[in-house]
Amino acid sequence: MTEKASRRGRTSAPRSGSVGEAGETRIEEPVVLKLAGLAAREVEGVEMRRSSAAPAIRSVLAGVAGGGGEAGEDLTRGVHAEVGEGEAAIDLTMAVEFGKSIPLVTDAVRRNVIGRVESLLGLRVARVGITVVDVLVGEGGAA
Image (tube, rainbow, N blue to C red):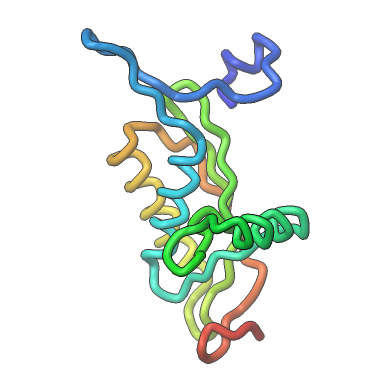
């Protein structure tokens, strides 16, 4: 959340936006979540993961209700974002394929997420925090 929003005592971050001569453009949090998730998945050897049981339960319920992306895939899995006035802070939870350098993979993910969010959404990315929770072995299986 931005310092300005914190000083106003908001409990949730204001949505990003820009105002031009013809009107206002707002980028809502779900757009940032989906784009950051897609950008992270573009890096070879990455699989997004949930960080707690509560989001996993929501995912199961969303899958039953017909939510998600291709073949029911949740494109926001493992992604958390706070969207403020013209900026975003993003946290990712993922597994990395065995044999790949975790520092190199996470650096590539961070660069890709920042590049995509800044160029496609026009938001400044304040930070991208990454938590690696597993190592993938074989056909997407966990260690």
